[in-house]
Image 1 (tube, rainbow, N blue to C red):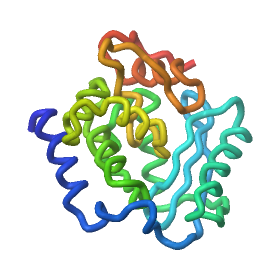
Image 2 (image 1 turned 30 degrees about the horizontal axis):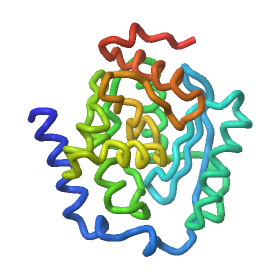
Image 3 (image 1 turned 90 degrees about the horizontal axis):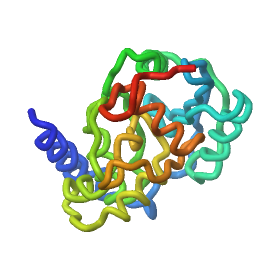
Image 4 (image 1 turned 60 degrees about the vertical axis):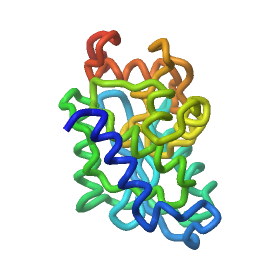
Length: 214
């Protein structure tokens, strides 16, 4: 399947499911969520999950405590997850952490097999996330191209705003979406543009050098 077909299929699936019609106004009641932090080749990351689905992923801050603190703020700032406790991951979450570690270490994986819970976000944002998640490691699209894929030509700015609110970077790889001139214009994750460039280099993306892990 071509990149274009895969993107179109992902967006279609996102819009066709019953959950895709749910907006933030119909989000589920507050629920318990779990979290943990773990070391990777680029520093300490953190992850939060509910059931068997990831709800937030945090790229490294200055130190592990800062990473956990930021993830906690994101989760508890979202009224769906007022209860957050640290737990040892198991099952699919443990596999997700292993997959993320391996990917960051250079064993590239599209990570699309990791379950995510984004049902609470608006329909347009879910479509943008689906199109972005269909971009393979080592490849990129422009904000305008993503807008075209979700049936909103000319909405490049809205795509950028949606990706700026992405709670699960890397798994939903917003770093693979660039400006039309292939430039790096902003990245809401810790480290900003430097982090975006580093992730693209790890994925051996053309024009972004070789991986630099340290």
